[in-house]
Length: 242
Length: 46
Image (tube, rainbow over all chains, first blue to last red; front, side):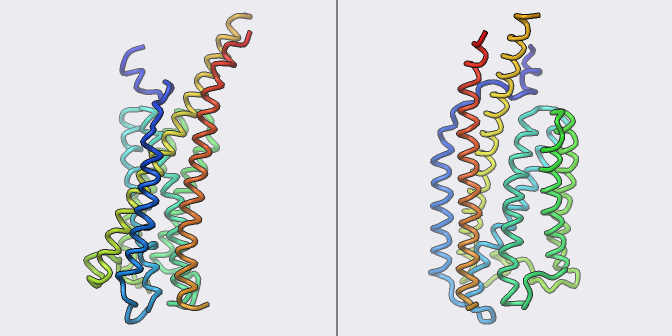
């Protein structure tokens, strides 16, 4: 098999990836540390009081879900161009983490919305477009689950992956369309008393996203390698008797 | 529910979601590793 052909499939024995456990611990410790610091340094907001502290989990979760969609987009395009299985697996790994983070964003927004807006949910442009992002992630994962042919699965899911990312700019811009949602919170738009906590929690969530994607990718590679071995064994077994 | 009730609910939900997904990934990885380790044994069977 040529080197180019070998690169198209991830069936070789994956390396042990011992760095994943330290990365997991560092990510979770960073998340806990950033949250504790956010609690300690941020005073109650003039309008929302202590409810403002929900920002430290809601906003970074939303940012991470956008980054996951961007990673999904990059590897989907790479797959369509190069047809390498590792790009498909990386896209799928980012999509799963993105789906979890988008679901978390929606749930945290709902918890924040109830005491501030008086409702758990409203068909506001920001909430609706974020729900569409969630549905696109779910559609991507469902498509992968129900398509058996690996090449067709990778090609179709890459198309849905690109479509998923196209919703991100719409979600970002949606607060300008008669939305009751506040303008996007960032270190540039919030009071300096909240900027440090927001930055640190953003970094912690980014680290967590890297870990989740890497861990999921490692699991996918192991599963593929095991599947390939079983297929080889079945072929060898069949070859003896034919 | 009080202001703090919503804040605690938000942080608790975050840790349940993140922790739950991390545990799911670790278990899935361990199962995949076991499946890979046992695969050659199946191959060796007559």
